Length: 226
Image 1 (tube, rainbow, N blue to C red):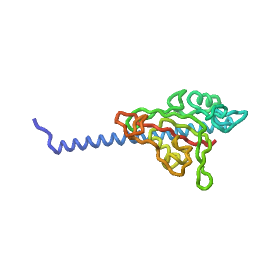
Image 2: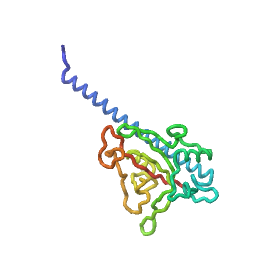
Image 3: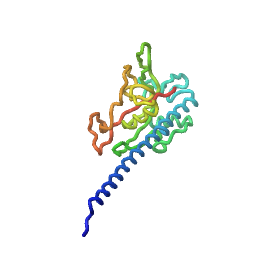
């Protein structure tokens, strides 16, 4: 029985390496395409729906029509003002006849399912809320004022940085129209990176990510125009 020569085995190994490399590149391209869809269709779609609601009703979501405060959920007496999420968000939009972007399914348009860098499923959701947001003051200082934001939850570090780059043109968790929730109201003058990266597993802040782990997630705030 005749065996394989070293040249033939080398060619086979090269071909296998090329196939593995092509599969890895393909996964990255597919994930980036999904990130682009989340940015363009889901996040920007909800931003447009929020603006459409304001244009049609004259108030922001959950505000009082008789005594508007210009704050999301301003009709609530709770302090701080709670988020408008899930079925409550759907009801506001549906009552005003606002078309919502396609999300996970009918009735859960506020959710979008995607895969993290380990290939595990993650689900991001959107809400709206009035939160502390730092703005420039005199003498180069910053002060915190309340602003209406889209709250985007369960973002992997890759997706958070991708959205930051798409919205602000650079990745900075402290400044711009897209910030990490823990940095949005900070009045320091220093830039900040996003608090976790792909080395962290879900609900962890240390480098505990294994191949089978879900990747850690963060929450982002996207500043609304009204």
